[in-house]
Length: 372
Image (cartoon, rainbow, N blue to C red; front, side, top):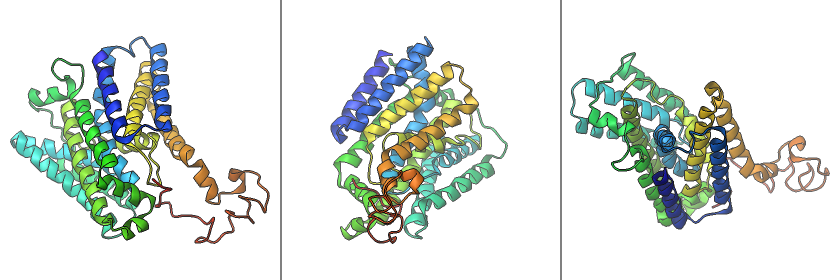
């Protein structure tokens, strides 16, 4: 348990050095502490090393997929096909292994599949000009259908223990799961790219204003396509880890995980409008999300109702940081409050609902963020 706590503190410190902590991140720290206290009070098993290990094992792949999702949402887009890419990669892994392919060759092919899947998403968004929400809802169904074609109702579960042990055993001489160790390495890499490179600054600029980023000489289409390719590759990797952890490849592996991934990213302070967010906040959200789910599990909470918790977290994480912004976008009076008709926020004053769409106080496109 002490090793797990130590590695969490080291990761948060590294991310804090790279990205700089904000008041919001300290609020997330308090949220994590509150969840730990809640779990410790409700179950004596919560603070045990075995429970920490199991929590990390079951949440590692979701945490890994949240990293590229963070960059994509900050850039002003979204990717809802992440769990389907995981499932498709898992299905391909099972099919190739059942045909007696060597495992290293399978890894290469699965990685290429993830890259191609991400590239399709990126090209449809950037070159064809389709909305990322519509595109990735479509590819969510498409990639899940490919997984169904690859495996059908078959199940592959005769993987070598050398690989399946990766999913259930810790790193040697530690209590750290392999998937969490991979998440830690990737989190530091993603944080450095996002907060300390020109590419990261370009991602924030695109999310704040795609038009301004384009006029500033940023290759918006190329960068966004690259983000989707990276997302596809990382999700394919998560599919391999998921398959080894369960020691089973089936066509519906990872079904529904995209909501968990989006919930974590938004809970971590990343603006759904783009242009805002940090990796430190997302890592804290990963810890809070996993801890909350584990605490509810230990308290015999109805697991079929956990979707309610995820839904509430999604709504709160979207609405709370953008309450002021939504108020300025000309919402109905019952939402804005009972302002005077001619005063600020009223229908006849500045920022009122009668303003033209392109003029001051008019509605803005949700694809443009509110700043870096």
